[in-house]
Length: 399
Image 1 (tube, rainbow, N blue to C red):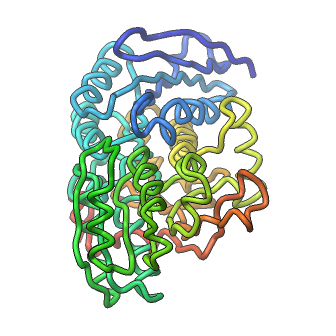
Image 2 (image 1 turned 120 degrees about the horizontal axis):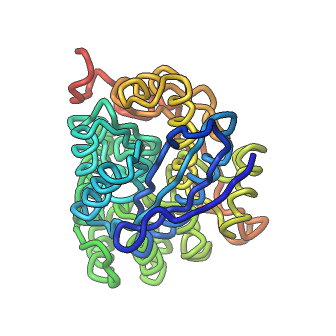
């Protein structure tokens, strides 16, 4: 297999890093665009790492399949995301978009991709509405959503004594959905929410929010945010002594990149839910070695999700053809198999039923190396972790 690279786009629309895989002469390549936050608060767990992960998947195909990976920065703005994706489809013939940031952008892209009949591979956006009331025959979610995150951590912490909660929530669709879903599972498990506060995306000073959380007396303080927001909140929570004061902290969406940025002294004891961790098995360790050869840091679950999504989509095209309806049908028919998914089913609503791991950030004294950050507390099969179809608002589901 030979791989060459060339630029296909320039300027505001982004750039292309294109594995060109040997195929039949004149055959149109499969073109996949990675839309990510390249420089903002979500760049660490998405960004260029998502492009690298997509490229690693593309490089695995040969024997008549040619794949090109394009990339652009949507700056966490839905209008920019839609504009770039529309341009890719209309002028570059892009077949699929991998969405790697906010729920607002993903919801806007979901509508566009339905209109254009192109595949959307959701790998970061966490709103459970993406496979709920706003589901699409062309949309597929390859990572945690707010329902699964809240279900896994909310039930576990409430049932082990954390029966009063306080939420610190980022003020946009993802944060509100995560708090809503977590509130449900806390109350269903016998707990009570004592209060919540919201903050803007990109907040630097969390002092007033943390003071409110301390004053509430809640046994669990839950961060419903991500990226740089989560990092700042966790660092400042350690400075304010919330953990030392007896309150249990959970970041309902946290990435290994966040833990490394914050450091174990500040993050220790945090309870998190993830679909991926680099040290799960021999296959995840081997893939992480490939990833780190191009970006010398641990991959996040979203970057692993970008790899899984691109790999599964290209397999579906090989099996079902380039037409979006045929490819979508093949994606639902084929099990997802990669370094962290084994024979995972894709539901009618586009939900990929990956296993969810409940993990706790290790204390520095028990960490064996700089990369050894999580202790796995348990896991939940995707069939039980995600919203059941009996509760789904997805119009694709036959009641």
